[in-house]
Length: 142
Image 1: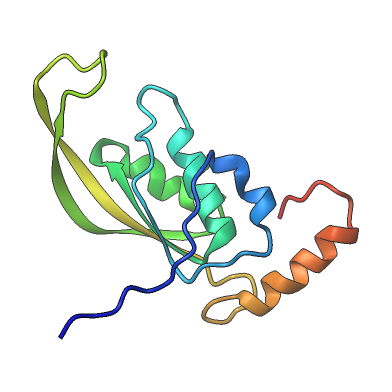
Image 2: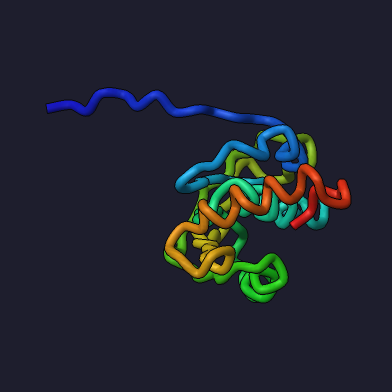
């Protein structure tokens, strides 16, 4: 028996493009963001945006950044835990890559938020927050 494909909304773009998706909510976000080694902080920007779209985010990050990300989760209003430790074979695909391929140790991190309404997924409170944002101070931040 094979499963039928699910009609899922797919989105792409810069991590800051979430403003146009304020009314879109996802049960779970799964992502492989840039690691942030060439552009410091880009990985956190992706996590921040994903947490605006969902209360559950699974994201791949270099193991060497684990302690930083687990601390940063609290600043983002989330809890984080490493759910898997992996090893990626990254082939040379950019000019700055020096080796033909390289093994990179990676964590699959689960970020979760339930603080918005005290419930399991926070959707009711998020909808109320959005209504307030439309007539609020205009900054759109939560």
